[in-house]
Length: 201
Image (cartoon, rainbow, N blue to C red; front, side, top):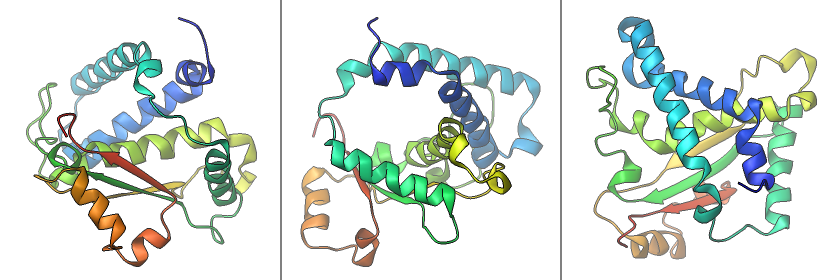
């Protein structure tokens, strides 16, 4: 497959290592890592994660329909870099996610690696919060040379995802929420908006 910046990033060891760390962290958040997860579960989860990354690699180029404007990407990187350099003075990058029942987290507590259903709320296991954990694990590995020496443990979040998804809604509802500013000041501090409604919308 021809390499471009997206596939190069996806194939980098740092990116893959961050995804692995985030996937194990999701076990902790969703299924009580210490109490329920055994080495068998960890191995099964690691295998699922590796298979997912290999399967998605061939779909990356086809899935990106609209590339963001360079200015937008520069602004996003600037927010992240400022947060890394001085977390006390700069808030994390806020990402707002809109969608329907899949994005809300319907059945996300269920899995195929032998763990019982999570007792934590389904939103804790929704893809939007797993995405937050991925970014917070991957970004420090990609930009670690910019971190102050005292902050290499990365005890602060670079990205914060807010899930505004509501089951049974479509993109017209998401557009109405934004048009009439129904979220008020929440959107004033949002740097990125992701629309993730059903494919049949």
